[in-house]
Length: 192
Ligand SMILES: Nc1ncnc2c1ncn2[C@@H]1O[C@H](COP(=O)(O)OP(=O)(O)O)[C@@H](O)[C@H]1O
Ligand SMILES: [Mg+2]
Image (cartoon, rainbow, N blue to C red; front, side):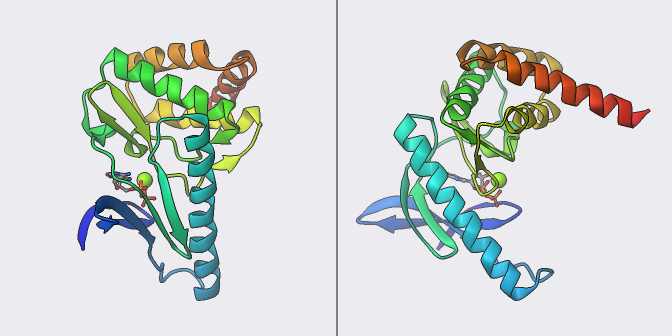
């Protein structure tokens, strides 16, 4: 099996299903965790990723297409593109990322690990990936936390373009933006 990706948690393989090339993501055992706890965590994150992908597919958010899941393995569509952290991010792409995050939040999902490692870019398109830490939520704090983390992974000018697009697409963005600023204020207070 060909390995196509390795993250902090999982290894991704290029596999075939009914003659089509797809991706199988396997969450690997972590020796530093208690075996029972580890098994439970890997299964619950896989299940989470399954449910989130189904919701995002249904709502038309740009993400891989869910195909199948069992235990600690999940199968989804193979996507082209490179991780956003290794790509030059044009304003158009940054706008697209902002739009997709807004759609995701309006679908009632916070990403939980929204960094440039978990976005694939290709042509003018951005796909959001990696939903093991996502949650079904309407919490303004959870949504603002996605913005705070993303800001840490891009340049200030890039973040500004992204945020403008996010605010334009998000339904009732004001509460999330206010919380985002508030979280940053809290951070400043702690740093002193
Ligand atoms: N649907 C996909 N198509 C192609 N490559 C993918 C896909 N999903 C993930 N990858 C690649 O695998 C890497 C790790 O996947 P990810 O889901 O982020 O795993 P982890 O949870 O371990 O971080 C990604 O950074 C990306 O390069
Ligand atoms: Mg990842």
